[in-house]
Length: 431
Image (cartoon, rainbow, N blue to C red):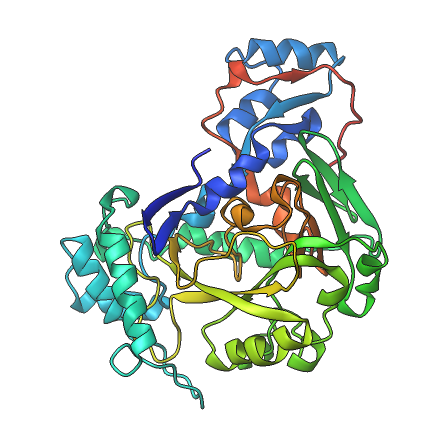
């Protein structure tokens, strides 16, 4: 498995979709559910009269086998980020006045010159000109991108771009999908193979192998702590309270005082590593380091920076933007104890093409594994999760939101004749 490509001792490149795809190399799919996965291969498999797939046709016609194994991946359009993020009005204005850049280097300059939307705000983010930390980040990021041109696809000029139309379409689709499932009950997939399940009234979800997941409100998080299981890694992406969340109502946020009540002490094993995603808001980072970590019995160990880039390696926002930044922070704390894993390196920068879906973080399970006290047998937990990771336990109010089958496709690299047939009879999936 090629998950990361090491750039230097201070950074790496992460293939966001690859880290997800590896959990679904073989997925247990009822035949009646194949049409839920957008792919020419899925269409062939679903047509019993297709001459292109006689093996699958014969199986379907006998009605003795109801399931096939196929490789799945998130839809490629989710990561079709070709140009920096901008409003359509700004995109059209720039088309009229700016010639397309001739190189990736000019593209980096273009991103830094992008105008931000004018918005009334009392908080202005710093720029690299007056912030030494941001200036250092810019140097690291630029060196990482420029030293590995093989990571990037040739840049498309604005005149050849559609302003990431396909990925924005996926974002709208995601927002329109309803989510509901039984709360307070732990579900599991103990098998070695991913599967497709129905939760709620109509939606299908792709469940990775060896996963445990439970849905509940924050007020009912005791349904998780009552198991009395201790975890070697706790990863969380809290629903931070901010002006944007209040204005747009994109998610149900929690106040700092509420988040402080997260039962980390009840869930963390001795020597556990706790990783907390933080936006580029300096106040929130200070809250985590000076309030949350001491209250949870943690000592800060390291801090990483995730820089979001287009497929050609440009930052999705200007690093010097006064309103939005192209990066987020991952702050690590360690529960002190005799049983401690390898120390997490501080100051590391990693880059990846982000998902078009709001706050969809890259899967870091393989990256973090070397730093866990439990080694290969480490127990891992994600709090406030919206997706699942193979081998992990996940808890959240929308714990399966990003596992919806509408967001997946049959992996084009999976050749149909080589796909494995599962001879076990499984119940058909109703439409």
